[in-house]
Image (cartoon, rainbow, N blue to C red; front, top):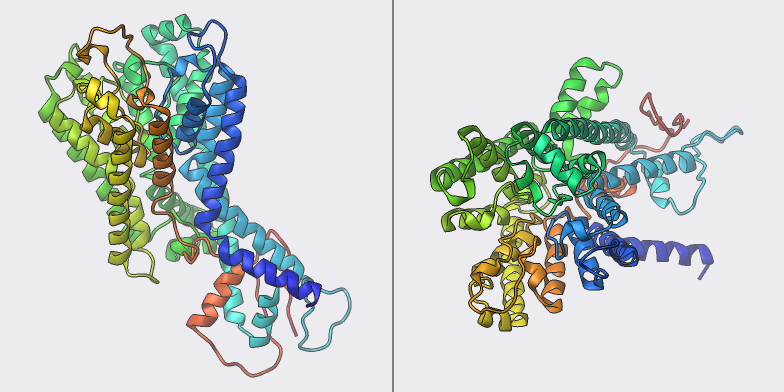
Length: 537
C-alpha cells in the first residue's frame, strides 16, 4: 500500500474515533493530571496546620476547579499562594466559555488551512476548468470541485467569515466582563471596612482576592480564598449583586447575552452586517451556545422562572430562620437573590446552609440537579437530526443511573462513618453532596462537631462534607464531577462543531445537485482573514 494512502487511512480512522466528547474528556483528564502534580509539588505554605497536601486532596481540588464545581477537601486558606494561582488557572481552562470557544478557533484555523492549501491562486496560468490541489489529503475539496457545488462553497465560506466575527465577540465579551467584574469587586472590598480588615488580618492581597473571586464567579466554580466563603460579605449588597450578575453572564445567561450583543452589532456595524445576519439566522451552525430567537427567549424565561421561584420559596420558608439572624430586610432580600443564583450553578454561599429549613435544602437539591437542563434543552431544541424527546429522555435516565450508583458506592465505602456518626453522615447529606458534584455546583452541608454523638476530640473544619470521606469516597466523587462536567455535551455531528469538510459531506448527503461539466466561480467573503479565494475558470 502506498505511503500516502496508508497515511490517509490512518487519518480517516483517527478522525472517526476522535469524537468531540472523547477529545473533550481527554483534554480534562490531561490537564487534571498535570495540575494535580503541580499542586502536589507546591505543597502547603509555611506555618500551615497541614504539613503537606495529600495527593488525593490535590487531585480532588484540581478536579473540582477544572470541572467548575467548587467543593474543597481542605481549608482553602491552607493552600499556598502558588497553589491558589494553579486553582485559578484550572478554573479558567475548565470554564464553560473557554471550552466552548475552542471549537471556534479550530474551525477558523481549518478554514484558513483549506483556503491556503486548496484555493490559493497559482502563479502560473492553469488550464481551463482545472484546480490545483496543494494537499492530496484534502480529497473532499477535489470532490467538491468535481461536483461543482459552488453554492455550498459560498455557504461554507460565509460561515467562515461569521465564525471569525463570532470568535472576536466571545473573546472581547470574556475580557470585558472580567475587567468590569474585577474593578467592581475590588472597589466593593475596599469600601467595606470590615471585610477589608478581615482580609488584611489573613494576609490576603485584596487585588489578587478580587481577581480570583471574579474568575471563580464567571467560571461558576464557587471557590473563594477565605474559609468563610461569601459569609464574610453577607452585608455587602452591591458586591453580592455584582457577583450574581457575573455568575449569570458566565453560564445560564451567556447565550442570551451573546445573541443580544450580536443583534445590537447587526444594527450599528454596517461593515460586518452580513456576518451578524448569518449568525442570527443560522446560530446553531456556528456555536454551541448560540440559539434561535424563540429558543433564546425560552431560555431567559426558564432561568428567570427558576431563580424567581427559588427566591420566593426562600423568603417564605426561611425569612426568620437561624441562617438569617441579624440580617436586615434589604440584606435578606439580596442574600436570597444571591443564593438562588448560586444554587443553580456557582456554589458560593453567603450563609450557613445547614441552618436552612429541610424543605429549602430539598429544593436546593432539586435545583442543583436541573442546573444544566435549560441550556441543554435549548441546544437540543435547536437541532434537527435527532429526536429531541429521545435525547432528553436518555440523558435523564443516564443521570438517575449515575446518581444512584455513585450514592450507593459512596455509602458502601463510608459505611463505618454512617454508623458511628449518623447525624453528620446522613443519607440526605451524601445525596446532597453527590448531586452538588454532578451538577458542578459546589454547595455543601459541611461537617459539624456539635452533631457528633460521641465525646471524641473534634475540630470544626471549613471545607466540604466530602472532605471527611475516605480515599475511595473522594475518588468516586471525582468521577462524579467528571461525569457531570461532560453530560449534555454536543455530539460530533452537531453542526456547531463540524469542520468544513464534514459540513460539505453533510451537504452532499442532504442535497446532491447534478450540474453540467464546465468552469465554476467560487465567491469568497469580502473580508477573508486567510486568503482571497480564486475564480476558477
